[in-house]
Length: 289
Image 1: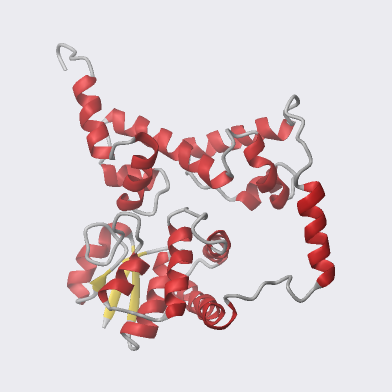
Image 2: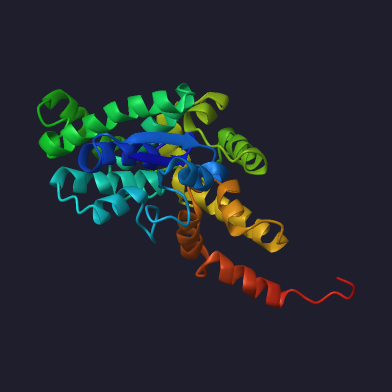
């Protein structure tokens, strides 16, 4: 069977083909096309569309397409259940769901950056998810430090002494201002946030930037702050009435409208369509318009 989705896969659009091939359709053929061609090409090629709005296999509330496929095809493998939380956390920017979610996002973003051909991306992604499945099956409870007393000791020293060192909040480092300018520039242009690239521009190590970030950005981590900025940008677009909600979701860097709606509701208390409706009602009537 043929399966079709939008081009430039990162997380769900690599994880789902792996899941389909392993548990649903061993002879599956996957096709990647531009977003606005998926529906027409699906009909033309008699292919099953997935991970786009308004199809059966897509995001629902806080669940991603990977979850949807597990539910529809009744996949009961315990290792897949472990993977599903990681994939969901990575794909919806909720890295708090699983420790591994941030790592999966970083690997997926790096693959997409290095590999320009979608078929090659899929081939490499299959290897990544085979490895994740092996870990979830055999190594889930094993800790990296558990058999290395020296590394464990260093970890304890860091936790007890360095991590608890008080922060001098009176002086704001120069890099904070520079980072705010970079984020604003990205918001106004392409909305792409690459922590490694940003760290390079600031001449800082990514680990240090990630660790220090929340101290100067409203006590939010990098992902939380970027989500906040995305929602603020989305609100300005909603109030202009020039874009559909689907267009706004993609213009502000969300994986799809379902993901956008859930994050928007978390930040504002309303879904985007209700917010737009209420804003329109509250906007003063201007004669001649």
